[in-house]
Every structure is written in C-alpha cells, then in structure tokens.
Length: 430
Ligand SMILES: [Zn+2]
Image (cartoon, rainbow, N blue to C red; front, side):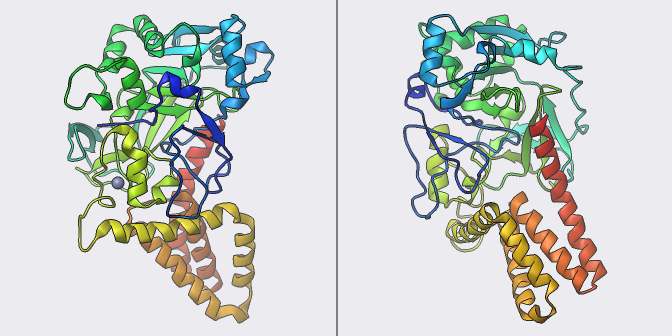
C-alpha cells in the first residue's frame, strides 16, 4: 500500500521550483520537483502529480505568508533566514485541546489562529455506519473495502489527522526532518503515535534498514491540506490512520476533502460502490488521471509501485491500456476546453440550444456528449468538470425538445455531481 503524494527529501526542498498554474487546473499552483515529468506525448502544459485533495491548494513556496511577522510574504530562502535568526519559530503541539488527536508542527501563530476561530473545532461529522472493512488487496498489502453497497456522495470515513507538518518546515537549519517528526511523535498520545509508526514506508519493500523511517512514512502517506484555507498561504502535509491506507487507482471511487472547522478529512463515494469493491483514491492530481498509462506510471514511481488498475493492465478484451489512453486523451481535451473556456463554451451551447434552425448541430452535439459520458463510464471515472457540463447540456436539450423524462434523468445526474462539487467547494472555503 502506498498513499499520499510526498516523495521529497529535505535536500530536495531547495530544488523546488514553481510552474505557472496548468491550464487544466487554473486555480491550483503546483510545486514541481526537480525531476520534471512533462506531458511528453500530449501537447499540454506540464502538470505534476498531486493527489485528489479536494480542498487542497498548493501554494507557491515563493509566496509563503507568515502571519506573526505581519503577514508579509517571504520566499523559502527568506523563510530559512528568518528561522535561522529566530524571527520565525516553530511550535509542536497536539490539537484539538480536548482530544489531542493530532500531533502538529506549526509555525508559531497557527495554533492561536485556529483556537481563535469561533466554536473551533466543531464535532467531527458522523460517517455512515459499517460501510468498510480492511482486508488484503490485489493492489498490494492491505486495502479498505466496501462492506455494503455505498451510494454516490455517501460519507465513508471522517477522521482527524495523526500528524500535520508544513511542507517547508524541514528547511529549519540544524535539525533534520526526521528529528522534527520524532519530536512531534514524542508529544502525541502513545496510541496515536503507534498508529503513525504502523503505516507503510514505500521504500521498505522487502524489509531491511531504511534511513529516516519516520520521514519515509510521512512521504508515503501524506495528503495535502490547507490547515487554514484562505487565511494562511501555507501548505501542510497530513497523515491519517485510515485515509492513508486507501490504495491508488486511476479510476478512483472515493474522493476526500478537508474541513478546517471540524479539523477533519472526509472521504466520500465518488460514485455508487458495490459491496466488496475496494475503496480507491487517486494519488495523482485529478487532471493527471487523463494522462496516458505510461506517464501515470512515471508519476507513480515515487511511491515505488506499479498500478494494477484496469486502465493500467491488460485486463479485459484487447489492449486495454492502449484503448484507455485513447479514451482519456479525448476526455482530457474536452476537460481542458471546458476549464479554459468555460464561459465561452456555455455561451455557444446556449445559443445553439435556443436556435431552432440548428437541429442537426444539436443532434451531433448530443451524440458527442453521450459519447464522452460513455468514455467516462468505460474508464470508471467521475469527472465533475465534464459531467457537470454535459449533464446540464443534455438536460437543456431535453427541455427544449419538451422531453420531460429525459430532462429529469439528466437533471438528477447533474444534481448528484453538483452535490460532489458543493462538498468540495464548501470544504475548501471553510
Ligand atoms: Zn492505474
């Protein structure tokens, strides 16, 4: 089992560079490790691998805002200097104060800001009962499985992190990241520290000695979360007891989102899941899921495993990965068009729908929309960008044609995807 997204050691931090927000994800700045993995076969901007993170915003390390220094932005180099001079300090604490569930390594000021939030933390939302079990997985190691049929959008897991640490905390001079993580673990309740230590280190395959074992666990199991979204421009790594155990698939059936008010991470069903099916997350950025199989494998190498999902293996008739690559390529271009030119596309489609002389064109666009949705189905992907647009387009077409049943069908599907979007957006804004 390998989860999370980090695979950068302390020295790599200084090599981190930023790239402009990729066209496919305009709102997300992406940190790019030294080993650039450009989109080789597709003529699209380079997109780095990050997990499907829901509310995560990946800040540029060149614009880190340190609140207790007056909120001034500083570069990583400046931050390093400030830390070496003692202007910026770190603090180790356990939160929330009543349960101490999460070992936190923060810049000073962050804890105070959290505690100053009204009614913080709110209780952790209740997940559905008895809907998962942990068992051996064909994807490797242990996995989390649906213990019953799970409906799209159902809340499966909610948990507070075992440990959180800023991505740039390891630049502190004179201390290794391993030492810092060990210090946090020492302050955590023993059972929570033990849960952290029991997680996998993807370098440990075959056993034997590994250097910096706690950093290995952190790198293998971390998710990116905005500890204080919209307040601090600081990206945190968070490790979870259960969520970190979800295996990867290029056709994930769950997604996660961070909620600062309850200080918890929620995992929901991305689509209907059958009893016995393994719950899978994506360790790749959601736009990277549309990359060809070989390129996804390259991105996943950092986790030291080969993806065995149907899109990456010769499962089913024909050369499945090749067919899957073709499908995903078409989906990706559609997604880019919708993301980059959302308003324009909406305007053009609405004009066409309203024009009674363009019936032939409408038919063609309807067929194209159905084809794209069919490709998503073949790939077992639920993509909110494509689905939200195509469902709403098909619904409008059905309304113009006065086909109420069809319109209702597409409206209900649009509402399902809308709920996913709502959860994601709401979590990101809180
Ligand atoms: Zn795969």
